[in-house]
Image 1 (cartoon, chains in turn brown, orange):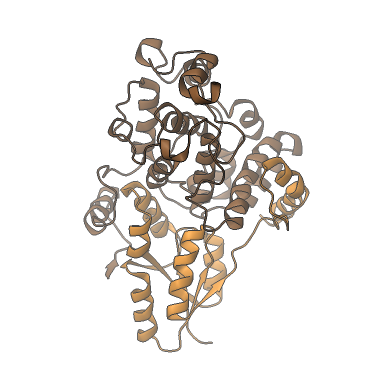
Image 2 (cartoon, each protein chain N blue to C red):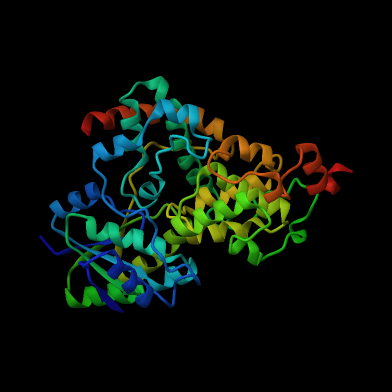
Length: 263
Length: 148
């Protein structure tokens, strides 16, 4: 048992203490802190992060007006009700989409509470034409290190590992790539995300992975390069020559990824 | 009034909650629980984010790295009669760990505050859930807004 200090000369001193004291329990590699600092946020600071009308229009874009407050919600620094009340200050209509997304978090919680032992179990069979046993158990090294054949995905993996924050749309792309393009069990990807995300919440994270995988939904979620370019193209390398696995139509991808289902 | 110890965990770093319990005379303890961190390993980034928040909160919090059950047993031994409490976790696996320690050491488990009551029946599709809770969620948020 170690009594830990509560005062540090600077951020680097805290990082050094964590690296030494927590060595036995930290995941391997990645000994850098996030650029996102843990802190207490005032109501004014929270309000500056929330732009409901812009959020409703742009949230699916990589540079859209998302609040980026999820790490603070996860740690209970601020609660969803408070964020909803701040959003409502600008009127009900503009706040609707933002509040709906907040309620998604409560929904995942409701699901997890209804199946407390099922956090890591398939809720339903895959709807991909494959059985669970057809999926590999381990995350491949090129995914874990951000060296896949696809530049855009490597960009999102760097976001995950260097900042602990990934845009929601990019999370869906990564999850679909892991499960459907590489045929890895969603559990391996979910554990990878939970280890890195500052907002890693088991209920939201794991059931979102299951939704992408189709074990908690009616069909698998997939994407193609055209979709990534539409939402992320001004920030991320989406050239066909640097993203060879993703550059195809949905019809071609479905036939390639789910050949059994297509029969 | 007997001594009270509030056992904080990674989901309840709320200044408002801490101030409420501080007003009741609580002292605060945060344990980086080695048993939990072994079960659910995380990156340095996550630990640092939590740690930075702990030291930013405007109240003294004792921070310990170790097995939470052992740490709490020692705290109880050091201050006989101390009443310990912890807020129930949203995460089913963390909740199990907290409740196991609470049962072993004699810690009271408090219900966590909720935004709104979830539907009585299990609802497995989002929009059914959303339509069932939307009115109460908006009402509670508006009421909360008047308190801010």
